[in-house]
Each structure stands twice: as structure tokens, then as C-alpha cells.
Image (tube, rainbow over all chains, first blue to last red; front, side, top):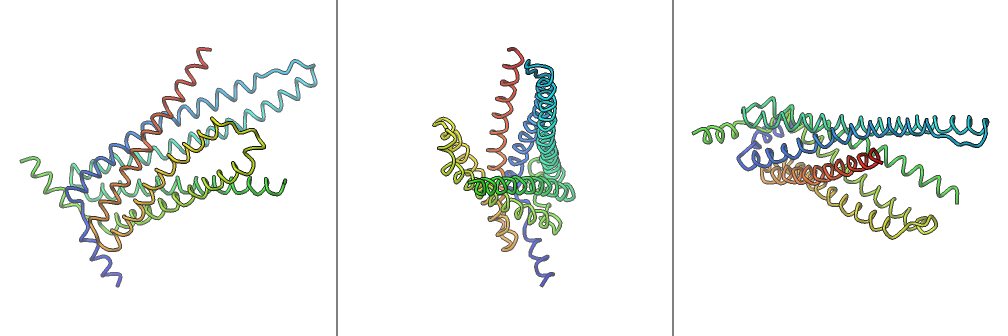
Length: 153
Length: 133
């Protein structure tokens, strides 16, 4: 049964039409990766800038209030920095996978390289795995906040 | 001559067991992403209609959110189609379905790529605006 399945796979290949579509897909994946690198870098810089601006915030309401306010702002700054770093990191890592797919798929098509094609699909598999896990985590956070909203009513 | 060689070469590459395994897994994850995204949008709309009025949600915010959801749904459709056709192509050994699946993957990358470029430009302009201020 398993053997039958393996044999049937050999009927599928990269024919002319598939190769054109795969080339277009690779071009767009490369474009997405470049935009992703820029967005990831912006996210990291935005996190650092927000952290600095929150740490330098002043309350001007006496010494005690000032200290309390600064501690709160410093903590908020750390949380914001961590959040933006995580977002930036996820975008950059997914861009690495997208670029890996694009480079290897083009190499596979140009050089007729079976192992490069396998590696390109493997990179794309990692790209989708990463985003699926991120999406599931985001959904869980949403469900938790939704539940806390319902319980607070 | 070179073109002919390349055409011949392209036909030499197969969807090996290894590649098919990766395609199957990515089709599965793509399906999960599509499903999770639809649930997320449904939850967002539910939150909007139950609490939106209380928290003074403006019309501009409302239309912005609806537009975002509509664009997101377009991406979800491409992802779902990629997942469905790729699995169908691999299970039924159908080259046409596999091509359709990869075609939808191209559309997905195209839409996401354009959106990412727009977002990067807006972010860059935003930062530039604040830096000049």
C-alpha cells in the first residue's frame, strides 16, 4: 500500500507550467523576504526608540511621584521592548525561510537540482510551521482576553 | 538551444517523496493558519459588536477594521486553496491540482508581499515624520 503511494508520487513533476508558477512564486517570496527584513529591522528600532522615550518620561509632581512614575515607565519600556523584539525576530526568521525557499527553488529550476528543490520545499514548510504556531499563540491570547472580558461582565 | 535544454532539464525534476512530505506538511500548516485566522476574525467581530459601542469605536476605526478583515480573508482564501489543491494533487497524483495549489501559493505571496511593502513604507514614513518633528 505504502509502496503504491510512493510509486504514484513519481508521476508528479516540475513540468513547464509548474516551473513558470514556481519561478513567479519564488520572485514574490523574495520580495516578501526583503520587505520582511526591513519591517523586522524597523520593529526592533521602534522597540528600542519606545523604550528610550518611556525611560526618559518625567511626571514633574514631586520627588516620590517622580520615582514611582519612572519605575512604572521603565517597566512599561521593558515590556514594549520585549514585545517589539519578539515581533521583529519572528518577522526576520520567517523572512529567512522565505528567502531560503526563493533562492533554492530558483537554483533547482536553473540547475535541474532535485536536492535544491527538496531543500526549497523544506524552507517553505518551516515558514508555514512558524507562522501557524505564532497564529495559534495569538488566537490563544485572544481567547484568554475574550474570556476575561466575559468574566468581568 | 539553451531554452530547449532548460525545458528538458525542468522535466527531469520530480516531486520526490521528500518534497511531497514537505508539501503535505506545509499544506496542513497552511490549512491551520487559514482556519485560525478565520476564528480570529470571527472573535474580533464578536468583540467589536459586543463591546465596540461601549468603548467609543469611531466609524473610521470600524471601516479600517472591516477593510483589514476583508484583505485578510482574501489571503486566507489563497492559503486555503493552496492547502486544498496541493493535498488533492498529492493524494490523487494530479499534476493539474498541484499546479493550481502552487498557483494559489504564488497569489498568497503576491498579496502578502505587496501588503508588506506598503506596511514597510508606511512605517518608514511614520518614523521619518517623528524623527523630523
